[in-house]
Length: 468
Ligand code: GLN
Image (tube, rainbow, N blue to C red):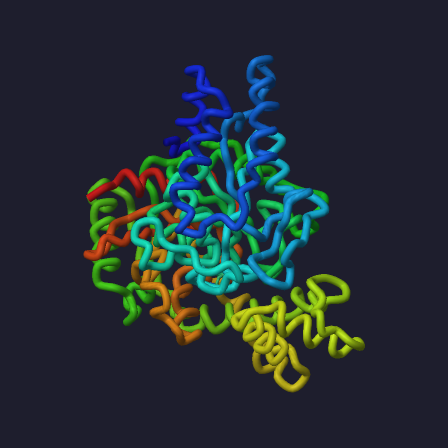
């Protein structure tokens, strides 16, 4: 089994063929079909790619990711392959072009092995809203893997691919990473192109990476990062080469975040012990007051649903999306196609988003939400003038059992520690921290200033090595 990019690269160096590596992953995929992580395995194209890349290796002209096998979330386009956002409305839709993030990996000779199950249109925190059914947690199939990139998280945890791509709008990479014991990065907003990523909430969406180790995540990130003329919101700021970062870190803890009533005692105690260990090792620890915890989830759900209602309006059975068999006349075409094509959670979001954008309620919800977002941005920026990274839990608890959370608000509260970085655009990462008494893992989250991914990875290594 190959768990990291480095393991793949050393296997190649010692004479292992790309097809042998691919076969190993395909075997793992077959063994773990019951987890429902893959919606589709692109076996034929992956095999053809393996041959082509092997020839390049023989000629000495292969890219940095030769032999690396990557799974992509079912909301990233890959030309000639189906992409559905795990929704019935996009059933059998074939990508007409390849997402820039995926293309940059292909350009380095990565193999794309398939598309990974997710919550429908990336809306969810448990991977239970997919049209293809729930993804089961690799560590215990009674539990959810988190969402919305649950398939990507499980694929990495179960070694079904070397690394996987996900998308993180409110925590969909970091939260499932926390619940599957994997590393999950959400880069700065604008750092990786969103071209070819099916939009959910465009001012929040970022492509992210799942890996078993920090080095693999960092390498994959660095290949995807950077300006893309096809995404006007991608930043033209140069991607920093790794620098000599300080060995002694200035870290920040937000005290208000640690007083959350729903914070599980074992998550809190593992977090506190890691903080103590870091202090013992000489890292500076500052406490911040950031009295906005009650606002982050409501503001996120007002603004993200507003954007979602607008983004998803194109799926009407005419412009985009599967047309209902019962379509007759324009109104019935829209109504029936959307009724049949969208699942319950997506409909709920469209209705909430339409409401908060409506003429009568715009000021009270959408406009107010934008003002609070600005406030959070400013307060966060101020914290980063004093510290290198903020550390916080990734999730208030470890994973729950499939079907256990039925109340949507309860579900939304799973994102309480992750939406902050999406509201403010900061890069953030989950690294594994510990396990609960039932054996289910949870992680610790680090957040850095905008475009400071290099420092974020450096600090992650220090926090990861400061084992208690
Ligand atoms: N759970 C959050 C939501 O449902 C985040 C989803 C995401 O990051 N894509 O909106």
